[in-house]
Image (tube, rainbow, N blue to C red):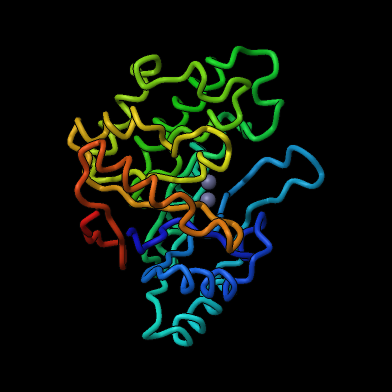
Length: 270
Ligand SMILES: [Zn+2]
Ligand SMILES: [Zn+2]
């Protein structure tokens, strides 16, 4: 059983209402031994509608509340302090300075916007083919990876397909190989990893992010660093589909998964 969830949000993230205590209690009841909170911090996030959150993080309050709970739950569960940084090419130096301001155990870099548009909103695909929307997203991801260093894994690598008009129906590693292969190679060469994010199952993809053929290719290319996270925003989403995650990873040839403490990797048997 995978006992570490490395992608978790609480109400310090603007799209979650869950108190951190409720998340931890649920993790304990599931028998987890490690939980890493990775609250959203997106610099210069674009407000598409009036109700769109800014995804700005009050990191000071988050850190202090985290430290209180870490002390409170000492001996029961290992709690880790992380962040999910939303990258965009024009905010990379800001992200870099921010990443050094706090003693993060773990930093996920994610693309939530490509050319200032979030695929979460239908406007992203308006006036263009699904394929163009996907390519735009992956090109922007590669641009981010090529010029940013302060992170350990790239989050939900094929996030864009979650919101495509046909989701993963016409999507495969092979079809997007020309852009996906350089992304994977660039991460591996620079000692960075990816995550298996089980929220893909929640969004009806019947697969994790990234999907299985991408995980397979990552392994074939020599990728070893891989964390596992539910991207849970509610207690009931913690460790979501972790059994399936383990099966998929074994099927892809992985024998270990990765956790991070103080931004240093540790490899645990699956
Ligand atoms: Zn994300
Ligand atoms: Zn997330």
